[in-house]
Image 1 (spheres, rainbow, N blue to C red):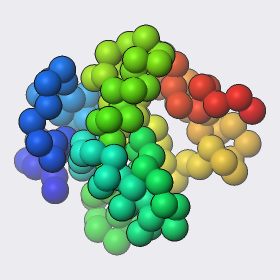
Image 2: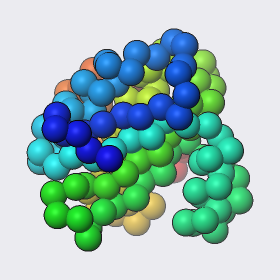
Image 3: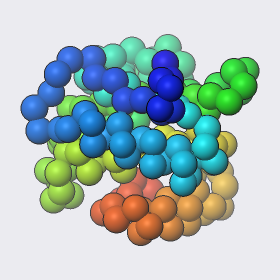
Image 4: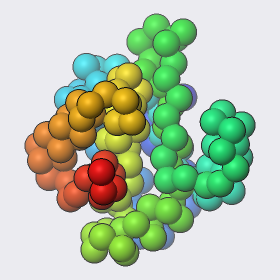
Amino acid sequence: MSSPEGSTVMFRRAQAGVRPRALAHFARTLQAQVAGGRPFACLVTGDAELRKLNREFRGIDHPTDVLSFPAEWKAGHLGDIAISLARARAQARQFGHAPEQEIEILMLHGVLHLLGMDHESDRGHMARAERRWRFRLGLPTGLIERVPS
């Protein structure tokens, strides 16, 4: 799934309102700055596919916005991320920014999970990392901050 340039972003089908090249550039920025140079692949798809993946890998039968699949077995490759474009669009409307920015927020969140962070059990480590990286990358409020504790 990776290319000679490193991290990749693939769309299940062409989408209006998001720029694939800009998102691929953002993925390579995450690779260089956040992931220690390790490439990852990101699939942007629909709710139905996220629901299927969520059910298959987590036993949860509903769609979600982002899923991460670490690839410890493959040297050099960090893993794979799947993002629901429908969820990204809805969340972007809800929080007042562009869908492309929401995909970037979700991609950052997914990369942090690929790096082994888990906001449900790490006593705020992932939340602090996400906040720090969002600030450095110029992104709006992240996923963890949106959920009241």
